[in-house]
Amino acid sequence: MQIEEILKHVDHTLLAQQATWEQIRQIVDDGIKYQTASVCIPASYVKQAAEYAKSRVAICTVIGFPNGYSTTASKVFETKDAILNGADEIDMVINIGWLKDGKDGDLLEEIRQIKEACGEHILKVIIETCLLTDEEKIRMCRIVTEAGADFIKTSTGFSTGGATFADIELFSKNIGPKVRMKAAGGISSIEDAEKFLALGADRLGTSRIVKIVKTME
Image (cartoon, rainbow, N blue to C red; front, side):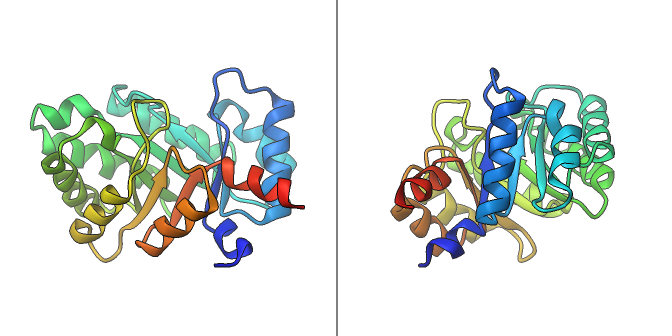
């Protein structure tokens, strides 16, 4: 697979707590130069980044991040605020405790409300697969599908593990036809990226791929 094709699927990501505007601006510059699918950055930088990017690259941000246990009202507010500030895409973290408590209806309603707040903007639902059983992952595939979200996403990159090939294979067997998949966390090589895409992932959450490409120039 050509490098340019891989980059079209990359959400070039910087979500470190210590990220500065200079670092965010570099991420945006890289996203523009390499034509990545988006740049994924902290919400506090969305307005500045959107004004700087001038629609040359999609701006993605995260809500309820990284633990997911904010109230639904808080997440909805975060979503509306991010879009008002210029975000093109939203990545939300589910309430994992609710999933383990069997509160599937509450999870479904939360995702529905956030998708409603997104409108036509893309919503990706982070389920943090490293903390879930296969049965819980399958339930989330159903919930994400029924709630009308655009993507199911493996990981925040802030927990005990990232994307695995097995999780993408599991997703592909259990999501609805309109739901796409994002593999995030631990994607450290071109070979990994190619395999995730071959398995059906549509997005890759990583900054490593762009770094590798820059070393090849």
